[in-house]
Every structure is written in C-alpha cells, then in structure tokens.
Image (tube, rainbow over all chains, first blue to last red; front, side, top):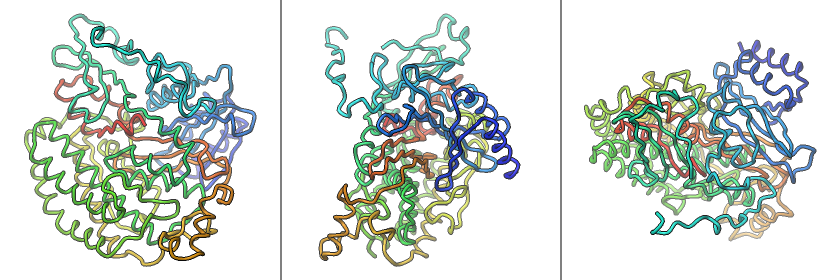
Length: 165
Length: 407
C-alpha cells in the first residue's frame, strides 16, 4: 500500500512540474498555481490524502525570493500515516487561490483565518469573511509590512456609550 | 457587527422558516468558560443553526512569535491552552529542536514525557469536571480540582511556577528535577487511581450524565476525517490516530501503552476516551519513573544550541562563556534556512507548529495549528437538531479553550 501510494504521488508530481524538497524526513512540494486545484484533487482521490490538517500562509516579503505569499497545506494519509506539505505561491495585487473547502471540510475556518491574517483570497469559499478580527478591520496583521504594535486600530474602535447601547 | 446567520451548507429554506428566534449565547456565559459567542437560530428549544463568532481573545500570539526568540516565545505558547501549559511548551520546543536537528538526552525526553502525561491527566480532569459541573453535578468537579491541585504542586516543585511554568528550553529543561519531585509524582500515581475510580463511578455511571451526553452531538467517522478532527474527538469517532504511536517522539517509542478508541462519536464517547486515557497516562508515568535514566538534561549538539546548566553559569567561567555564546545574537548558532511543520499529541489533539526559519534563532513565521480551532469549526454540524440544553454538553466534550482558539 505504501509503495503503491508513494509511487502514484511521484507520478502525479512529475506530471505537474512540481518542485520536491525533503527536510528532516518531511516531503515538501511546491505546485504551480495553475495546476494547484487539479493536483490537490488528485492527491486526495488517488494518493489517498484524506485529511487536511493545516492551512497557513507565510509572507515572504523580507525573506528574499520572487514570490510574496507562500500558502502551505499539510496533508495526511491516514492509511499509511504519510504526511505531505504542499506549497503554492501567490502574489500581489490579487493573491488568490481556489478554496479547498469542497475537498476537505477542515479548510473552512483555516482558509478564513488565512484570509483574515494575510488577505489571501480563497475563491469559491462558501463564507469568505474574517474569522478572528472584526469585519470592519482594514489591514491584514500578519503581513510583514504591518507593524507589531499595530496602526492605532484599537484607539479608533467605536466607543459605545451607555445611552446608545 | 453584522453577522450572516446562515451557514453556507445549512438548509436555507428551513432556516428562513417563520417562527424561528435568535439567541446570543455568550460571549460572557458560565458554560463557555472563556469568551466565545454563538448566535443560535432556534425553533422553540430546538437548534436549527448555530454560527460561532470567535476572536474575542485574539492577542496576536503568532505576530509575537516573529519578534521573540525560540526560548522567549515559550512564555507566550504557555498561554495558548492554559489548561495544560506544559504540553504546549513541549510541542513548541519539539518543533524548534526538529528544526535545529537536536537530539534530546534520554533523561530529558523521559522527564518531558512524564510532564506531558501529567498535563494530559490535568487537562482531561478539568474537561470532564467542568462539563459535569455545567450539566448540574457539582461534586465531581471538586474531586477533579483536588487532584489538579496536586499536579500544580508537582509543577511548582519542578519549575517554581504552578501554572505558566515556562519550563522547557531548546534542547532541555530549565532545571533538572530533584528526588523530592520524583517522590511527589510517585505519591500522586499511587493515590490517584482510587480517586479516579470514585470519579469514574460518579461520572461515567451517572444516569443523568449518560442521558445528557449519549447520542448527543454525534460526529461520524467520515465527518471527523474530513473536518480534520484529532485527539479525543477523533478517537471518540473511531479514528484510531494518536501521534504518540503513529509518529513517536520523546520517549513514547520505548513505552508500552494503548490507544483508547470509541465508536459512538457522541459526547459520551469523547468523555469515555478521556477517562480511559487518564489510565493510560498513569501507565506511561509509572514506566517512566521506573526507567528514568540518569545524566545531563541539556542536549550536547555543537554546544551553542542549548543553554548550559544554570548552576554552571553561575559558578564557572566556562559555563558563563557557554551561556554568552548561546544567547548573543551575533554568536548564536544558526538554524538552517528551511521551514518545517512538527506536531505532538496534546491533550486536546494534534498541536502543531509551522516554523519558517530565516537562519536566526527567531522564527520568521511561527504558525500554530491549534486543535481547538479545528474542533470548534465542527460545532455547528454537531449541534444542529439538538436542544438548547445540549450546547453545554457538546461544548464541554470538544474542550474548546478560547485562548488557543483565538491565539
């Protein structure tokens, strides 16, 4: 089972023009945006990655390199216990990716959190709203160009007085 | 703020039916234990839909992780799941050590295993106790709190702090433990089983508790897998996955213990798993006590990754130089410019950290995969069709810790 599963992953990955990398026993693959949706579907249906454990973004603004946002998906194959880290890069001005909600339900809140913190838009998400921050919040605080102490949003929060409430 | 009350996959026509009423549950409600809000659509007493509204405790932990170094950030990580702080610390430093390629000393990994299992008992006791308190049984809560108090004592003896211990360091622990500490743990595992037996009779055989939790909030196996559930929530739904066995870390590979699994998928099954896991944790601690190796607690490595023993620092010039080399940013060792995801089995489920390293001992990005966030996302589908009074049972069985949920 293991051999078969991993062979089919390799076949898939070479077909997609994927960059593979191995670090401390962890497979990390980078998939081009154009092939992303199809590759993920194949990874679930044919390579047996039935659990999406995590979705996150890293803003590579100060890291060096050409791309701005790295979106990272952690997949698990529960039968073999194999993990796979899938990376895909998106860029300003319109950082967007297809949503994985229809493949794995766990993507729901994880993608909303990623949008909330980085402004990466997941197209086709059923409820594409902020998760943790208030809806009227303007910035994306985990981006590298957002200062640690904030931009004064706290001071500009509307104050509700006792008479208005 | 305007809220869309309709969840995307709810039956829209049903939800639009007339005669439904809306109820705000929280953010300040005794049964939420911390601050989280649910907007409920009710038909009489039946819940048609629930929309969680979270973020009240969001404090930008991940942003702070980019400012603080690997050892400093442990004080923040502590405050995520504050019911079992040491489990978070162990998980965070597990990720750091994996990035640095550090091999722990046997004594350190056994001590960390023991602490992690004590935290599991600690966490499960509060989860079970608080839930039965919410369901109307006050007595059992005090049995739980009493035993938790003894674990606090154990933490205090080891680190000087009862609650937010900040006890782990990269490649080691703040202090080695004393014989007194081992005696305390021995005493705890000797006397705790009788309390556990009482507790088991009071909770798991309590007719009111059984009727309030059995068949309530059912999560099927497929939903658990697709929803990314881990830990007791997944194991209560028949997904036999436990990182301690599947991806052994610390000393778990050498120890003999069972993975507890139930198939009911309801609240009762999740509590069953938790109660039985406490027994397994006791088994693990007992084995660790028997086999606890002697030796240093800090990993050797190239000498710069791990801090030297504090006593060395204060009493010898070599120790002081070692400390200086490990602390000063221009002399510190440099981790590889890589990124990595590492996770451990925390009491609540898979607690993972994704670290992007830019070659300094400060993470470029420190993301937390918190089990509470994943589990709370399952909440609307668990609660639909249940009664208003079932909310506390379902919330309690998922063990949502808002500080970890919002970070």
